[in-house]
Image (cartoon, rainbow, N blue to C red; front, side, top):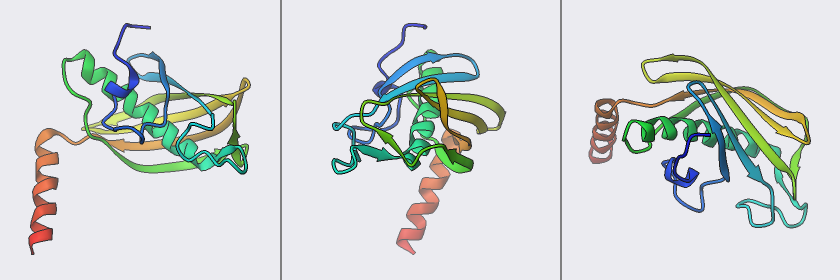
Length: 158
């Protein structure tokens, strides 16, 4: 893979909210990240020795954010702020990801239009697809983001 900074530098998140461990591969329309499930993961349940499978949605979203951050980095820009607008057809073959599971999260951009994008995502563990979904995301332009912040401030002051 192309030499790039660590994943935490490509995400608009801060610890402890970075849940994805490594950026494995990234291309023009695809990305592959990895998560190692351990007792040190945020939200790890010591009683069940697992993380609920619904966290797969966040793993997918952070993988997509890593893709976006990588492409921004390649162009000399900071990781952009993006929004997860929706998740379609999230399906998991399990109720939880178990301690010691290694999750490979893959996302492929299937559509993009003016900052709105759709990604097909899947999580693979033990060479089997254990979760899949389609994510809708939006990266606003600088002017759109400034307008959102202004509108929010106006609502607070009203």
